[in-house]
Image (cartoon, rainbow, N blue to C red; front, top):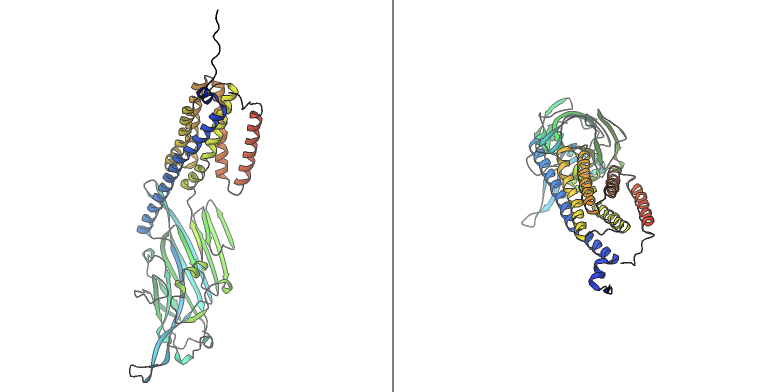
Length: 450
């Protein structure tokens, strides 16, 4: 019997059997999978943008986020000025300018009744509230602004305030001040302290040397947010509502808060030391429109939806590369330990299944919520990949083991998503353990053999 000599292995044989080349192809495949992964991320962003568009559309029809500003007391005064006319002659005239005074004490109480409006698959939180606003103005310090009492025109004074969306007003506010009931009207010209300003004329003749108490109620509706502008020398705000997941924000956090399943309550108390506005000033009617200063004096709350599936899906998709990497490493070690080759094309199919996972997660989360969608997408993906591996390796035990490993990966990501403050620490510890396990199983592999 003649034994033919073994044919020496050529370059193509080495390329097919080399562990190093296989690792190179797997690494290149992981990088290629970044492209569809980024497309899925763009899809998530597009859906989140669509949600925001729907929320803006509903808010536009109901009423937008409300910012309660004011009140401010405006007292006109006469100033005698000299000037040179066209004939170069010295002349004089009286000009009407305005003195603006902020409240000494400002108290606001609001009680929110909330509901959820639906637009297709999207939800928008809206509210109705009656905000009771009261306080007082004190005597102006005329010396500080170089004025005298005889310059003032107290019979032409006005109380000015504003909300950000006048469409939300359900009744016409009536101000009680100086023992008068003052009807309000919108300010139509641009020469006003606030955008969407409201004003009420008040006769202060004989009342300039004492306090001026005021009170009025804003019966209004809004959506998503309710904010306030800190204008009082002392500003006290108390807000209650039946929303169980508010988010307090702005320049100041509440001094007291209580949140439970039945609703929330919050109280703020602020002094004028950290307020970016003076207590009184003249002429400048744009001071309160300064965006930076207004932002520094704005605070309030947002009606946060209990589950933001887009935010959680975005956070989950950021771990897509890690899941693909760990899955491919596990599959590669299984291939080496069992000495059964798995074609690169099969790696491509498994990688594609793990990318489609995020599309499943996104679409189902819009219908049944994030947690249920995560379970559906994870079970479907793990079952598909495990069944595929079972058919490749012809070994059900190996497929079950791989399904357990993949389930652990998805469970690990779910836990990370739920945690916020401890996410980094738990994630780092888990990755450290995973690296240790990979070291253990790879220590006896001969990486140089074909």
